[in-house]
Image 1 (cartoon, rainbow, N blue to C red):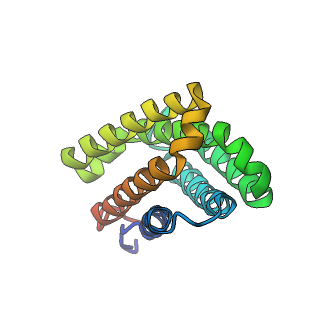
Image 2 (cartoon, helix red, strand yellow):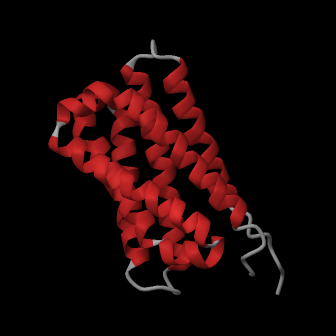
Image 3 (cartoon, helix red, strand yellow):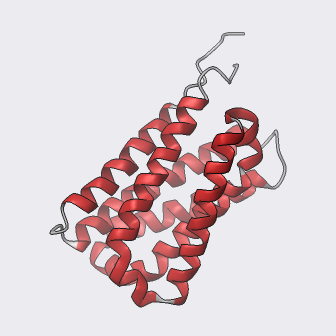
Length: 181
């Protein structure tokens, strides 16, 4: 069998894109909300595809976790496409979709924590656990208080996207040399 690098190139690309989106939202507050909606839509599509690919890669090894990745991936792709195709409508719907996307993504990542601990170790495991629990809490808070979402969306999303990007880059680097094909 041929050995292939376990480096997570897709995870690395997602991490870099998320960090760039987060920094851009912080640095350029004058950007139109529709532009941010479009960018978040693209990020949601890319992350959804990554979750679906993860499902395909690990579904034979574990039980319930990969199904959540598939569901979260489909929801992310659907939400992202809606935001990309209808950005003006997306501004209004964002107060509902954005928290649902955060919750779905965090649940998907929490379901994968067993795999993360095996592949990346306890430090990254606890970082991902903490990050995704905070994401769940904030996602539910945004669902309960839509005005909170509108008022704090840029700041909250900026910082959280940067953290998600860091998480994805760390996961990509930690996977180096762990897969065999």
